[in-house]
Amino acid sequence: MSKTEKLRYSDKDLAYFKELLEAKIEEAQKQHELIKSAYLNDASNGTEDTAPQFKAFDEGSAVMSKETSAQLAIRQEKFIRDLKNALIRIENKTYGICRVTGKLISKARLELVPHATLSIEAKNMQ
Image 1 (cartoon, helix red, strand yellow):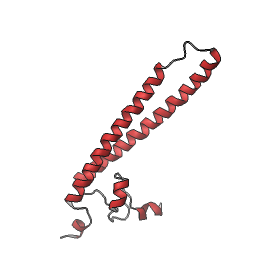
Image 2: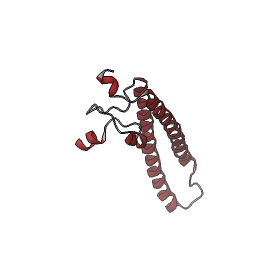
Image 3: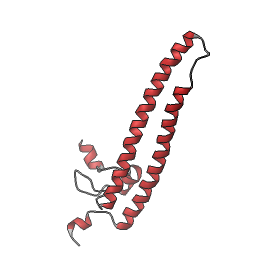
Image 4: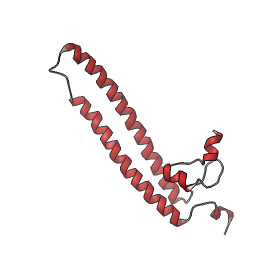
C-alpha cells in the first residue's frame, strides 16, 4: 500500500459520510425552501387596513425581515454548495483530508461538520 492510500478514509467510511452528506443536503434544501417561502410571504402580508403610524413601523420591520431572510437564504445556499463540494471530494477519494496539514480530519469532527476541509489542528493555526 502506498503512502497516499493510507492517508484517506476507506471506501466503507466514504460511503457512510456520503449518506450523511446526502441527508444533510436534503435537510438543508428543505430549510432553504422554508426561508424562501417566508421571504415571499412577507411581501403579501400587507398593512393596507391599518393606521398610518403602524403602517410606517410595519413597513420598516418588513424591510428588515426581508433583509434577514435574504441573508439566511444566501448562507443556506453556501452551506448546500459546501455540502455538495464534499460529495465531490468523496467521489475523488480526497474527502476528510485536511487541506493544510494533509492529515485525516477526525471522524468526530466530520460527523459534526461534514463539509469540513480543515482539521482542528489547522483551524487552530488560523
